[in-house]
Image (cartoon, rainbow, N blue to C red):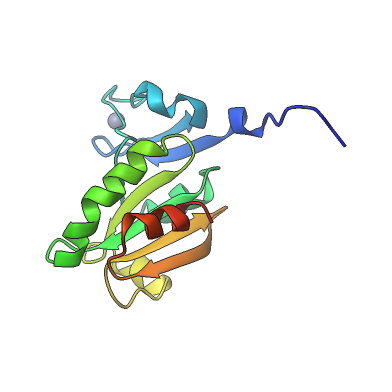
Length: 151
Ligand SMILES: [Zn+2]
């Protein structure tokens, strides 16, 4: 049995696109809570809350991020989605560096929604290494979100 420390956590990265200038950034997971800034425009990447993704940025975000990625499929007109939003904010804030929480507007990202067969919103899906691990359909309490996030 090895007693060597697992150093994988210190070398994990998140791959996120700056919401302001759309430049891709690689952020060390260990540095996420240090309020990292975009390498191009120097504005904060705001990873303490759900990060907006779209059809263009989705695949790269989930495949090039080493920590699990939780995706909230939502729409602006969806009441239950609005109820879920503060819970996702809390999960994002409390799991900084260990989990990337993202949100995808299904009206603006129809291709991704179709690809993952999202038929109702809100739908929350956990991805690891770019692959779906588990999902919750409909508004769920925070405990269910936390359980999903730890799968
Ligand atoms: Zn930027």
